[in-house]
Image 1 (cartoon, rainbow, N blue to C red):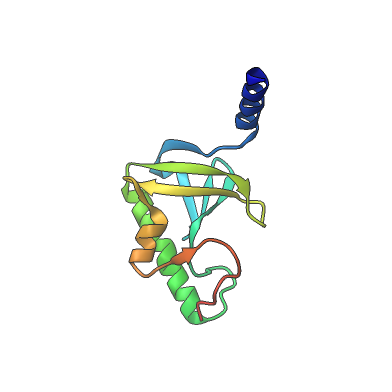
Image 2 (cartoon, helix red, strand yellow):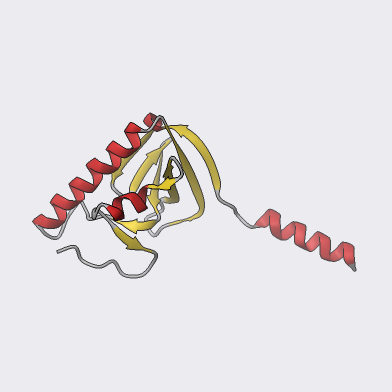
Length: 130
């Protein structure tokens, strides 16, 4: 009985995807915009926050704020020697991987939120920036 339970638990842990974290040179990642990154040919949606759109924005304010968020995110990443890229299991509705970027242990999204360039986002319908 105990062995059967142990085997079942081992199989469960093997089957459940887990996050993968690695420290990478900051110059090896490209920020497409404030909440999308490209690393080793793969696009990642940076989770936990939302920045305004830079591609097909709904108004001039959204475009300007989205460009500011993108510029600031790139600045933060490029000024760091290394960052922690945490790749999470799953994909978003566009097929992008899910990830977080930590700069000296601080989440990129939290920094952008504190500076007014992003807002918290978990799931559901995105709110308009206009």
